[in-house]
Image (cartoon, rainbow, N blue to C red; front, side, top):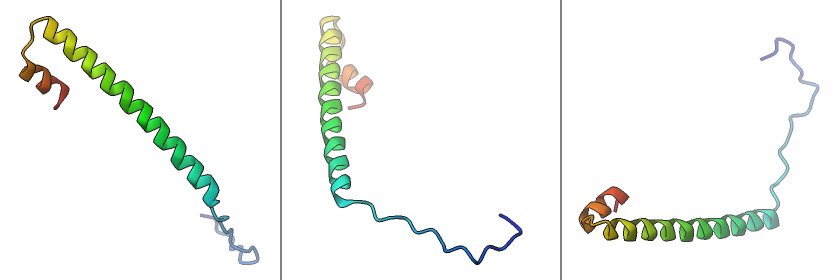
Length: 67
């Protein structure tokens, strides 16, 4: 904090966040989340099938996947 008082300056005001931009950001975030979820599910199924093929018990696979 500065020792000099600057009362002559008007306080800075944050501009309002454009609603249209917020909607676009939310839509993009939703699309990215959906894409990530699909990839995660595919990878988990792939890994589980591989472990089952290797002879691992389904309960152990579920425990390791945190299910």
